[in-house]
Length: 224
Image 1 (cartoon, one colour):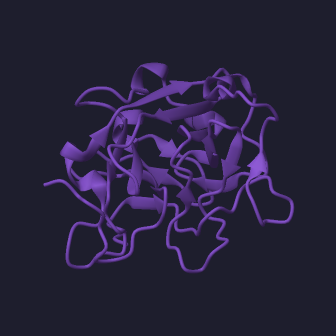
Image 2 (cartoon, rainbow, N blue to C red; image 1 turned 90 degrees about the vertical axis):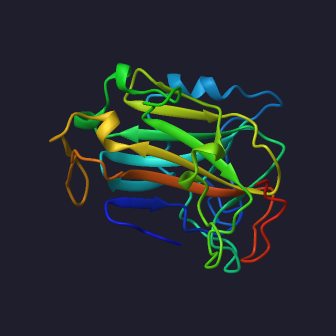
């Protein structure tokens, strides 16, 4: 996986491990019931403590969540054979973020729509381990998929994703620091980051596979 200058990549994890599962063997269930609206999470005062404690670039905790109420820690691996988390293809997926109090972005800066969006989602049937072909869907704007992003009342943000064009696929959700915050903003965490200007992209990326992992050289039906 490429980790370029000023790019923080989340999601170097295996399949199926969840935040909230006490034994670490499966995903933690957020809410019991057959129906679950991802938008309900915006009313929660915080992301559950069992989720990944990111503590970097203004983000205190982060989780992936699906439409059945299961939480997934992008960093908790249950299968050493997979380089990224693998999520169920039949469920809607969201990214749930809790910011440090000092780094809650202004609502006007939180958008997943248009050319100036601070939050973007991409999908393509690429292996993140590919060395001879494309590895990362966010490198091509043609791979962008619909998404929405909203702030909650307690300093949280929920990004919900539209349907991926095919399965299996790799999904990447990007958060641009310079579009979420004014240049010069200090982003809290174990190591402080200062938002830079200029043309170089810098931000946080959450990536995972949908359906199943994709082996190098096994990109599945990528349209060109």
